Length: 491
Ligand SMILES: Cc1cc2nc3c(=O)[nH]c(=O)nc-3n(C[C@H](O)[C@H](O)[C@H](O)COP(=O)(O)OP(=O)(O)OC[C@H]3O[C@@H](n4cnc5c(N)ncnc54)[C@H](O)[C@@H]3O)c2cc1C
Image (cartoon, rainbow, N blue to C red; front, side, top):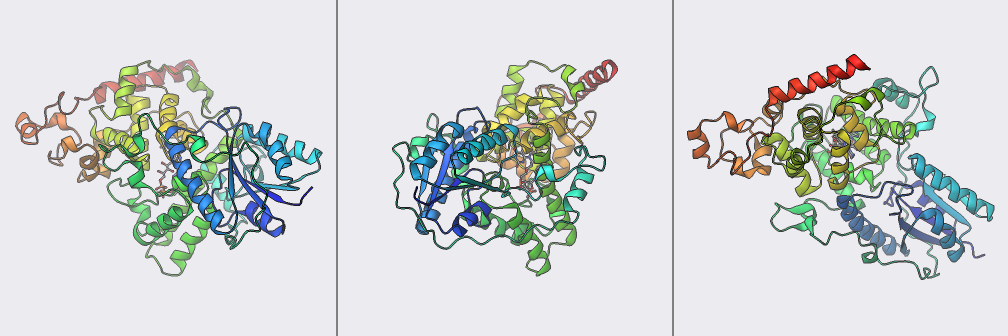
C-alpha cells in the first residue's frame, strides 16, 4: 500500500485552525482531500435549499485554496458508510483523519467507518474542530446532563481556555494518484437552485449572491468587519435589526469556514489590544452567544431527535392548529404584522434573519397562529443559510417553551411593541416591506391604526397593497394562553 493520508472534510471547510488537516500535514505523507455529499438521509439531515447554494460556493472556494497549495479536493456523493472504505482502498491511504460530528446518527456513521477501516489495517484519527467543549466532557454536579444554560456555560469555561488557533498549512505534499471514476465535478453535485434560481432572482433586492461571500476568505472578512464596525456596543445593539450590530458569522460557523477558537481569540485580542472600543461587557455578551451555540450542540448530543420531539414532553399534548393558509402567509411575509413580514422577507431574500426578529416571527407562528413549531423549524431549515442541526431546533423549542431552559410559553411577544422598541425608526421594516415605506414611524408597526387619510397619503390600501392582520393580536394571545392553560391543567 502506498503511504498517503486522507482528509475527509465535513463541517470544517477551512484551512486555518483545522486540527485534522494539521495532523495530515504532520504525517509527512502525500495527502488526498475529499468531501462527500450525503443526501442519503441515513445519517445527517439532508441540507436545505439555501444551504446547498452556500455549500456549492464554499466547496469551490476550498478547492481553490487547496489547489493553490498544491493539493486537489475530490468530490463524491453517497452514503459515506458505504463509499468511504472504497475511496480509501482506491487511494491506498493508510491514515484517515477528520474532525468530529455530534449528532447520534453521524457519530454512529463515523464509528462504523472507523471500525471497518481499522479492521482493514488503516489508522483513523479524529479531532475536535467545531466546539470549545465537546458534549461528553461536561456533566452537572449530580453527574447528569445540564438542562440550564448558565451552569452549563460556567462549567464549560471552568479551567478551560480556548486553544490558540492553528496556522493554515502553506503547502501540501499532494498525492499524484488520480481520483477513482466515481469522483464528481462540483456541478455534478447539483447544489445550485435551478427551478427557480431563487438565489439570484433579479426582482429580489440583492438575492443571496449579492449578500454573502461563502468560504474561509469571506468568513475572515466578515469577522474583521464585525470587529471594526459592530463589536463596540454589541451588548446593547445586538437586538437592533436596523443596525449592523451582530457578526453575521453564523453560516460560516455552521460550515466550519472559521473555527470557534479563532472567533474566540480574535474577539478577545481585539479588545485587549485596543483595536476596537468594544467593552469587556460587549466581549462577555458576544462570547456568551457563542456559548448558546455550544449549549445547542450539547442538547443535540443528549437528545438527537430534538428537531422532532419536545424536550418537555408535556408539550406533546398541545393543541396545534392545522392552518395551511396562515402558514403560507407567514412564509411569504404577508401576515399584516410589519416586523414579522420584514423578517420573513429578509429570510427569503438573503437567507438570513436577525436573531431578535427570528424570535418575533417564531413566537408569532407558535403563539399567534398556534402552528406547530416543527413546521416553522422545517421552513427555516430549508431557507436559512446558517440552518444548523443543533441551533435551529434548540432555538425553536426555546421560543415554543418546550425546550431546555426555554422562554416560558406565556411570554408572548407583542409584534407592534417589539417593532417599536427594536426598530424605532422602522428602517428595517421600510427596507423589507417597501409598500409601507412612506408611512410615518408612528403607525408603521401597526398600519391598521393609521387613519384613511394617512394611509392614502402613504399610498397604502390595506387588504390590497398590504394585508390586514391575519389574526387579531389580543384574540390570538388569549387563545394561546387558554391552550397553554389547558395543557398545564391536564398534564
Ligand atoms: C427560531 C430561531 C432559529 C434559529 N436558528 C438558527 C440556526 O439554524 N443556526 C444558527 O446558527 N443560529 C440559529 N439561531 C440563533 C441566532 O438567531 C443566530 O445564531 C444569529 O442570529 C446569527 O447571527 P450572527 O452570526 O450575526 O450572531 P451574533 O450575535 O454575532 O452571534 C455570534 C455567533 O453566536 C452564535 N449564536 C448567537 N446566538 C445564538 C443562539 N441564540 N443560539 C445558538 N447560537 C447562537 C452563532 O453561531 C452566531 O454566529 C436561531 C434563533 C432562533 C430564535
